[in-house]
Length: 133
Image (tube, rainbow, N blue to C red; front, side):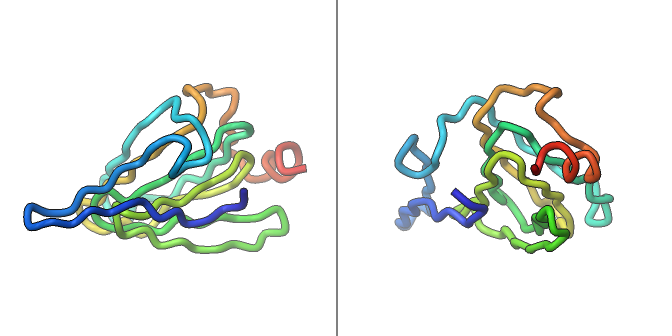
């Protein structure tokens, strides 16, 4: 499955909105790890990375931010996440960085593997030369 926006169910009633995610109905993998990140500032320097085998979905639980996905041919695509009812699916071996955080934003990450630093690629040249081939 390519990089794409996933739409999650949204139930609305007078009390508010409820969004939920179920395996395998709404996402293409079994969740093994969940984490969330809160940026220190809008100007926080973007940190790019890829994961060799792990798939990931990123959701803007609060606020908004941009996820920039860069391909091996150096082409890039920007996805603006601003709703907890949508998530960005990132297949394994996808280079991405997050930027332009709105104040108070929170990124929620659903991952297909337990954390393994050997699966992380933090250098774009290494990604191009070894992982993306």
